Length: 412
Image (cartoon, rainbow, N blue to C red; front, side, top):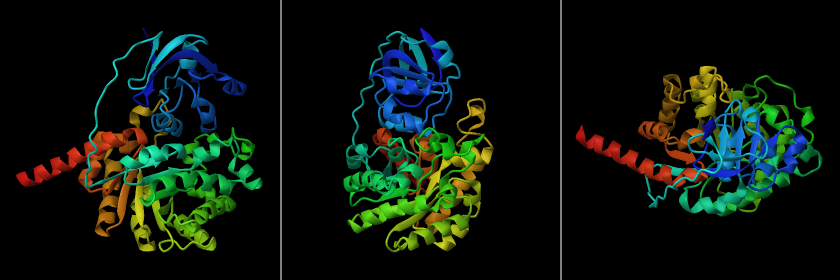
């Protein structure tokens, strides 16, 4: 019997007893295999949620960072149910179907889909996004590099706010130790490091997080490079970690600046990097993540300033373009990654990169959606960087899309 419906975030299925998280202390009582039901999950909970048999939330979307990381950890997850915390009770046995978003009463047996994958080699590079360093070694054989190292989970699982880690003299080492596992696994394939990008609401629960301001809409608030530039010591600690790794010989690293609203933010980031003894474009590749309409529409300024690569964050670009909170359940129907306005900006920046032989890459949720990937391959994007559980499927899909383009070209 179907109990409720949300948004499925993965292909995984889990069965277990419900444990509702109603207060902070409950998170520490989680037992392996339990189905965790919570109003809203945050990054600092991931250390505990990774042992769950499944996670169900009232709020959140498929592009949320918690959903993405749980998918990497192979934990079934359903978000945006609206009322799971009201309808489900502690001790109930339920089945979580991460494919369809349905929660069933009792144990439901599903026929597993068995598909043998041949390793396809399309012309478009297929890279991977890494949130959890321990996954890198398993993902490396099937990918052409890392399109985005996201260090937020490395920070969150210490249960300390970056300020606290900095105060304790640990921040640079935490970052360097996590990133080292990834660059070592992928060497000499390129690995792009994304500087810190986490909304204020996901930092509040960490030790020392009471310093964070309250924001009604954190995804459009104090985040991305703007936050780091207001707290330059944090950014310096990130760059110091990169310098450690360059000094160790890991020259496959590149740095990208996230959620840039203005060319001046990009210029200032480069200056701080130079101050830390690293020359952008010479000692290390330096690029930008285009996630705001302002960055997309003034992209010529970034080209003039100099970029070695460009990545696209279509979830944030759609959110900012369409005035729709991508975590908002009530406005979810208006969140359209393939809206013409979004695609026009995406096509424009890809074409400008191609004209100058600069590598362009799509990262994040969109890189795992075949219809979006097909559109971007048609635009001539150079790289698709997807989640670890999607690499083989996307390799095959891109290979087929490229063949379609070739066949259609012959027909003309």
